[in-house]
Length: 161
Image (cartoon, rainbow, N blue to C red; front, top):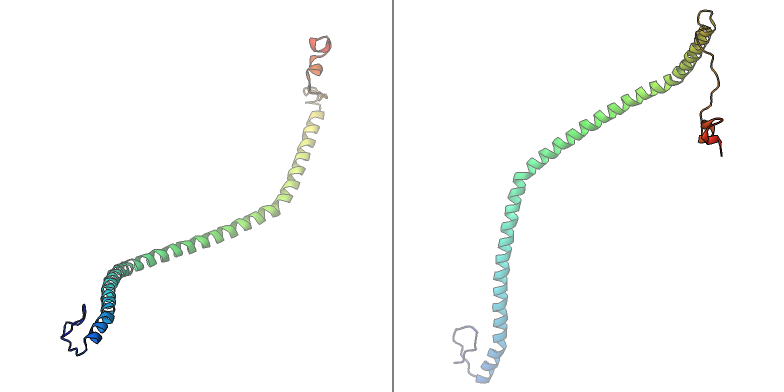
């Protein structure tokens, strides 16, 4: 009997020794390839099991935390909605107030100018009255000194050059 290496351990009847040894040489590498493929499949299977375990843990964690995150997101969106509504109302009120001020400003400026002129008229009339005319000095035109020459005046050291 002829038994090829690394092959099926069952007895093989071989009536032609040359043929049996040739088949053993051809089958042996195929068997080695199959063993390597089997080891590789087992190793990949273990890695896949480990990966699936990780995916299962992550998925369980997501199932626990997703409702909490959704609730927080809903609360945040509600707060943003309320804030934007308040900003919209405040902006509208400020715009209305600004419009009222802009409508009133020209009249206020005009009335203020009239009030200043009337006040000047009253002060001028009071100065010209017999009771205050002698107690208030008349305005004289005065100039401010601009440089040392004008401020020194005649006879001072600044005018003697």
